[in-house]
Length: 254
Image (cartoon, rainbow, N blue to C red):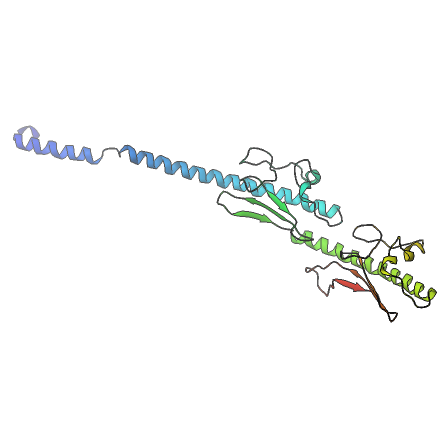
């Protein structure tokens, strides 16, 4: 039994027990602090992931409103100032999204987390984006369905413009016959010009709904009279890469 051990053995046993207690002692305060900091960082990462998910979902709702607006407005995407709570696009968004970073409704910002940016980099497209917590940008562009609908609409308008330019050609030919082969000047080939005022009907630009005129935009006329009595007459068309077949920038009257 232990009570019969000599005093030296009692001392050795006490030393062994003391070493065991020291081995199982609690970590120092610095280790506790580091663990708490790491847990806080992980918790913040999870929170940011959840916030980023909410931002993506909100941006998709705004995108849906943008594309419904385009379908209801002759394929034209809204201007920048229209994409906001209370703007024209908001009437197509059931509930304007809330930003988990700013704790306000999402608004147009300069890169602050939870805000968004919207731009029209070129005709027929848009860019909607928001910065995420990891520094990357979540970017949305026109969906394939929206682009296809817009392309079909564009081709229908092209056909209307082609019919209209043929009417203008008939007017020019009539003018040349009535004026001994002299062609009308470019300034006369418009609704308010000499060619237009001589007819009760003047074709309209299917893109703007206004009277067709010479210019460089889609739906506008191209007209060049030559000294030999010939002329070039055409109309600028919509070019859609999603639909098959040739799609020239200008259709020339036949």
